[in-house]
Image: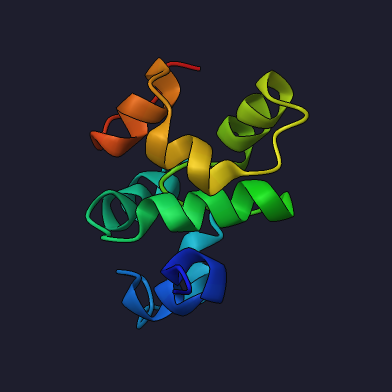
Length: 105
């Protein structure tokens, strides 16, 4: 069985799939609007895991800005299995993200 995350099929289920990509690569207060889309998305964790795995430098991915993602990457510099960590870990970061809360970074 192929996991949806592994196959990248999750992308077609993203809440932002039909939106203008430029609306997700914004700065400042415009990021709040992008976050609203992300936090209503059924594949938000897959998106965030993909962004962390690929070290996406710009835009809002999985509801987090580049600054927030960099903070996570600094905290876990050797992590290679982001999807598994975000989906199963009992640590506060993963639990907050699964609950649709902004993590305490």
